[in-house]
Length: 235
Image (spheres, one colour):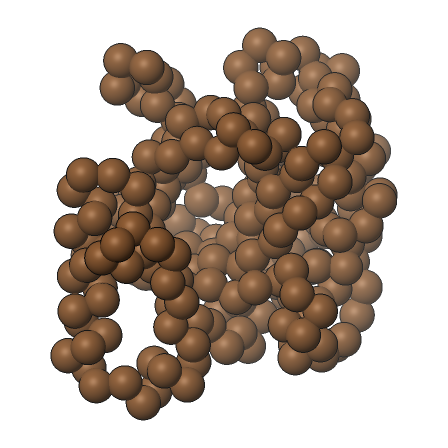
């Protein structure tokens, strides 16, 4: 399987101007409808998720598929509680994840997996050039890539990444409702919400690394997970 960028319909000059003013942009339809649905299906049905969270010391923690199946449920609950407690005072997150950075993780997917095809596209020079053309930035080099799945109660507290020249999230969430949460929220210095991006299928958001943002916690009544692929460019 291979995926191709659809670039002809975009006003690149308009996006560059918007990015220069706001430090963030979003666009829809950079993949075909069929390809976007294939990625959504793969995230929903064909991905061996791990659990990504922050531990009691504030360090990133990953529970592998094997650990999720073998650990005592009470130990898992303790680690979930630690992530929630950290969120009260600082940086914390809790969501499903699948690494798309390491060669081993990509090989484990297999070349026929839609996520493998998407990762191949996102690691390409073509995609970096596409992002440069949209933002006016230059010399972008993708450093990391991860698929994420947020379930009811999952979250990512307010954070920045000043070392990243550009961060992107390509969302593959189907039929979302805004009251389910899960928006990327952009925060002002005074604590107000300057803007937000609702999860949508085939929606690509690009934003400067130093923009304060969070992922709103998913409501208990959210009808489906929130799926996306997130990457980080440096120079």
